Structure formats: C-alpha cells, structure tokens
Image (cartoon, rainbow, N blue to C red; front, top):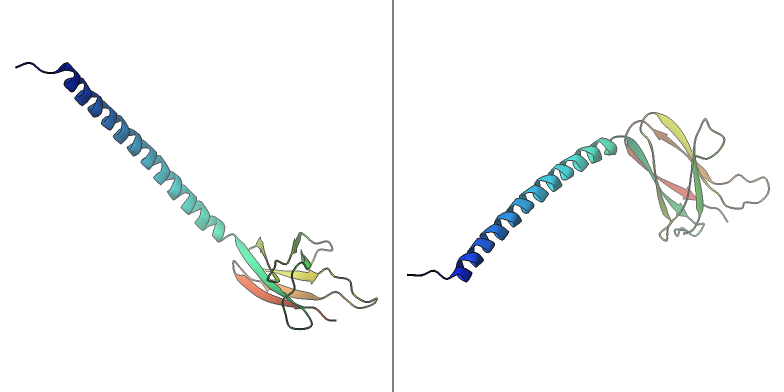
Length: 138
C-alpha cells in the first residue's frame, strides 16, 4: 500500500499549525491574565488613595444648571487647585487626596457687587465620597 505524500504533508502541517496556535494562545492567555491581575491590584490600591467630592449646581428655580465653572481649593489655600465645569445635568465630580482636610467648593459666577459667590465647605476624613449641592441665587 502506498501513501499519498500530499495527504501526509497536509496532516503534518495541520499538526504543526495547531501546535503553534495552541502555544501562542497559551502564552497570550498567560500574559493577559498576569496583566489583568496587575491592573486589578493597582486599581484596588488606587481606589483607596482618594476621596470624591460629587456635587450638583442648582438654580434659583430648583432646576439643575449646566456649564457653571467650579473651583475647588483646600481651606488653607488662597488659589484653587482644581477647576471644572458642571455637566449637562448640573453635576461635577473631583477626586481629592484621602485624609483629613477641608475643601472650599465655589461656583465662579458673576454676582452683584459686595455679594459673595456661592460656596460650600466640605470636610473629608478619609477615602470617602461627599455629595454636595451648590445653590445659586437670582
């Protein structure tokens, strides 16, 4: 009985290709699993390193206001460290360092002469979320 050389070559190629595919799949799977574990552990470490100030800007008619410039500073500082703008729902969020600290959150809007800008003092104790509301007057 004679063997067909084309058939034996094709079986060999299939065997070689399937082995190469299996090997590459194992290597890539192992690398991606290690990367996923690394990013998970770093994400857990990073998630404990900050607090979150989450706020909503309210207008005089009790509706949310979009596009309001917001500045956040430590109570002991004169200049703001973070500046952001309320989104289309009137909301904003800023990560701040975890630990005991007071922050001043201020809406940077034009006010009549002698009238202070709307602001809220936020006290952070640790890695936590504080929800606040800033109410704008007429």
